[in-house]
Each structure stands twice: as C-alpha cells, then as structure tokens.
Length: 121
Image (cartoon, rainbow, N blue to C red; front, top):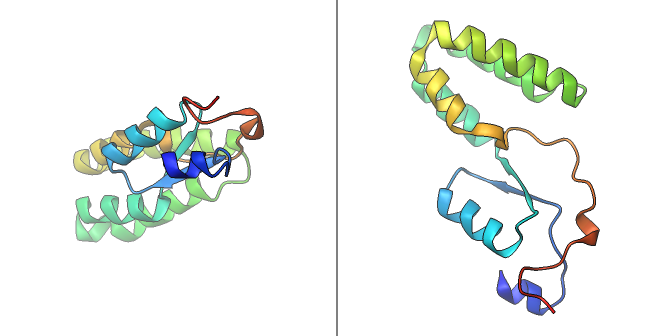
C-alpha cells in the first residue's frame, strides 16, 4: 500500500474486502478515512453455510433484497427487517451477519478525492 502512495496513485474511494480483519486494519492504517465494504457475495456464502438447508433459499432472497435495495434508506430498512427476522430464525446466521458490522453496504463515498495517504507530505 505504501508503494501505491509513493506512486501518487491517490486514495481509493472504497475498498471491498472479504472480511479478513488484518487487511481491513492495514487499509485503515494507511488511509484512515477509507470506506471499507465487505464483499456481499462472500458474506452471503458465509451466511448460507451457517443456515439450515431448509432456510437457505429464503435467506438468500432476504439478503439480496437488502443488498440490491434502491437507496441507502431502503437498505437500512431492509437491514433492520433482516436482522429482526433472522435473529428468530437462526442464531448462527444472525451472529454471522452481525459480525460484518457497518461494512455492509456503502452506496456513496463522499470527498474521497480530497484525502491523502497517511504519512504523505
């Protein structure tokens, strides 16, 4: 990442990561203002692996409805409904979903062009 800064490539507007906490920490150390989003496909696979077989199709439909919502407000509304429903349907799915925290999903990254690499002169 330091090599990217040295080449003056600028700060990424958004990093999409698979959930590796070391990668997220390294990105945040280099670019503290960087928005980080979990890969929604990786998260869905993890959720499906935690779900009982008979609930997987329903889970995938609910998850996609949330991820592909038309606006940030619609995503948040769907997230609340998803969290409420899956807390009752499957504790393991609920816990895995909660683990992603606020890294699912981002719609816009504002002001990314104004930022510089950490430690850049």
